[in-house]
Image 1 (cartoon, helix red, strand yellow):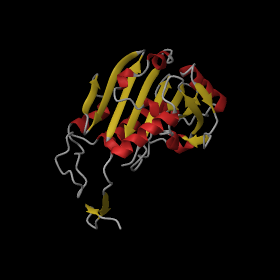
Image 2: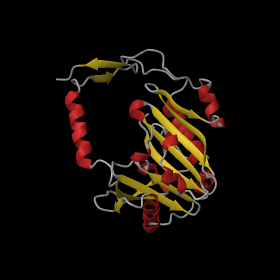
Image 3: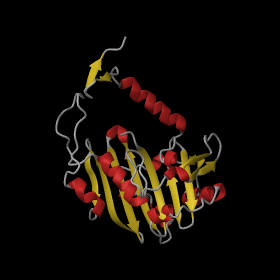
Image 4: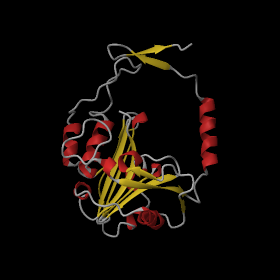
Amino acid sequence: MGAKAGILAYASGSVVEVLRSRPTEAGSEAAESVLRTLHPDWSVSNEGVSPLVSDLGEAVYPPEDTAYVSSFPGLEIVCDQRLMLDYPSRLPQRLLEAANGRAVILHAMHSVVDWLAFAIWIDGELVRSLSVSPDGGIQENIGEPLSFEAPFWGGEPPAERTPGWPNQDPYPLPFHPLELGEETLRSLFGFVLEGIPDPEDVDASEFLAHGFRLLDPDGPTPEQRQAERDALIAQMGPPRFFRMQPDGSMLEVDLP
């Protein structure tokens, strides 16, 4: 699985039902207004954004300093890497206050580290938050598990290591976070990013999302982040390469 996402929704009702009704997206000006409401002191522009318009399924993991927004009657969806919080309950208060009585739903996952996080606020109260990965374990687990979580906590489907990879220790969780992440996305938003969609699933590619350059005046600049990455890369050892074998296992190889 290779899914990555950082999604925040404000909904007057069920996100799934709104999207199943195939609502008309409100357009770029409405999308920009959403961002300016959420981040009144930040810089919002179209400069350097490509594409300016994407489909929602492709917009869920924008580049750094970029946000994509879909605005519908009764529903606003914001996609931004900065929403990928290890502790979802720590979502900035201003983003919660912007709900004005609507439900707030956060969903984030990253395939590189098998990480999932999601949270739900109703009437301003956090009712469920989960953040989990095989390396970090259960970082946050607040509220009662939702009905769609039950099979996963029961070990169905079981999480298994990829054959041939160096680490073949038992998987440290009863489920694979990305598999739960897809089911969470389906249950809360009505669509999935990977795997075979159900007949009832929403086709996220049918909805538009508008892109904006979004800069935090108090955050690190793109240049500062790049310098940090370069310093980390300089400390890393040489890369290792693997090749998939006919039986599906992975074999480490030396490249010429």
